[in-house]
Length: 145
Image (tube, rainbow, N blue to C red; front, side, top):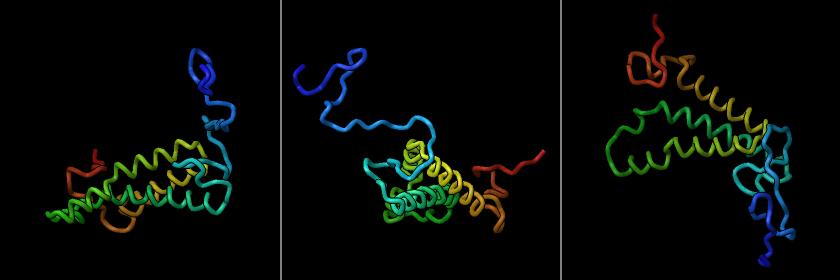
């Protein structure tokens, strides 16, 4: 075992000592020094952390919009199909989930607020009749007793 790796606990291998060991947070923490989505991003700059928070918020609002705009992309055709693939909400939901796995409380609040604002704007009926009213296939069926 002279390849630079050292034996760890229960036979696992650890990184050589010449590399910087990075520990991930496993509990929520406050702070602007977080790693969100990519190694080294947003870094130590507070402005880039703010960009990351706004991006997480926008992704979640977009997810809520995409989950309720079935009629906008209903036209058949290759261009519409390509647009549907590019805007598929599952990829954006996975991106939001990976951002949440940074365990940064600011990111958590931005994601929750993004989903809440998106729901308020596109599904709650606060700004007009929601799309699911009168339909049996909506994400939120009408509540009746």
